[in-house]
Image 1 (spheres, rainbow, N blue to C red):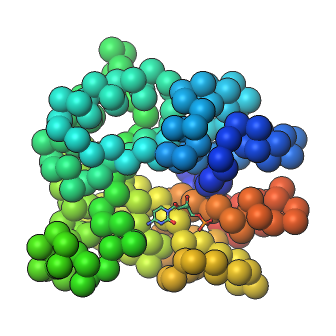
Image 2: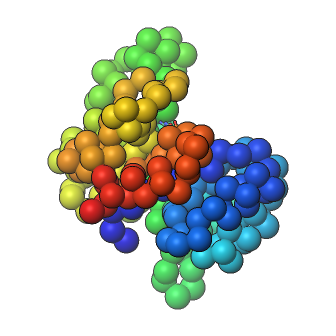
Image 3: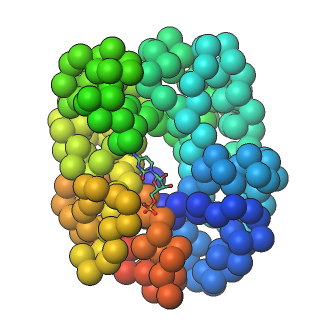
Length: 232
Ligand code: C5P
């Protein structure tokens, strides 16, 4: 898969999601389904979106004992999603088990990427709540290298970290980056943002874009602008 724009479909239910996706009569965008939509609608929402011809990043961020993650990944793999994810904090052993569970009898599997540290966790919280004293950047790179060692395909990170992750883990190791905004757009609650063109220059492989597309007056035009800036 080459560089692509993934739309974060952060909607509360199926009706709203389909009304949004119905707008796209040409190119079918790659979509991200998060916990809210998945827990509201269950696996059938994944099957329905897949049947409409979209690629799917199922963003459920698994984190449990290796055996449970392995068996759950086998279920997600049977849903035929294109990308799924987990928390690297679950350890290398859990990530290896995830790959095992995800791999189908014919050897194929969805791409698997890791969340390193959530962007909602800052240095102070990490030290106080998690007792991790190392600098955030070191922790993120360590988790990314663990993911690489466990056989994962990449990480979710900020576009500002994409080059460093590629430097440490290789050019083929995918960087999937949220925190993208148009130069003339609203930042919302995102703190460190980059434009689609900036993310391309920074080396992001996929950008995850939510509100700049979903809340736009013309969502299709906003999506096409993202594609033009990031992919072309
Ligand atoms: O609307 P917006 O473009 O900010 O949406 C970004 C999407 O990426 C949301 O689904 C958000 O939960 C997700 N995300 C993020 N930052 C992370 C990890 C995921 O914004 N570090």
